[in-house]
Amino acid sequence: PGLPFRAVRVLADKARGRSGALALEEATLHVVLAATHAFDKDLVDTVVQDNVNPIDGVERSSLILASTVHRRPAADLIRPEHVLAARLRAPALFTPALEAAPAP
Image 1 (tube, one colour):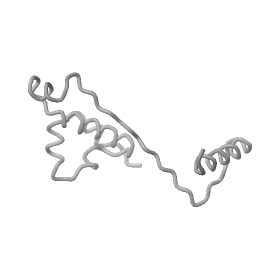
Image 2 (cartoon, one colour):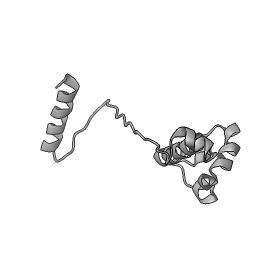
Image 3 (spheres, rainbow, N blue to C red):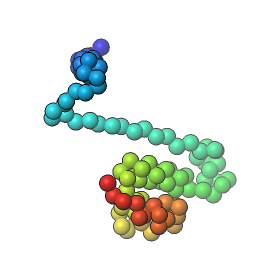
């Protein structure tokens, strides 16, 4: 294993010895979320047969994820000039209850 793996292993061992408490000064934590989007049909069939823009579904999923992670209403995460178009494509994301959610 490489040096980063060994460093994490040492920190984990020390944390276990201290009941999980380990002060880390001047450290940053990076979290990466990965998401995939699946369609019932392939891309061409989605567009041609169903007359559906697949980007709308991906955009809606991305807004749901971003809104959840950042604890912000979807409208706060979109450039103002694009809010109306997004509101028309995904009205459920712009309900008054969701838009009134308190900011962190």
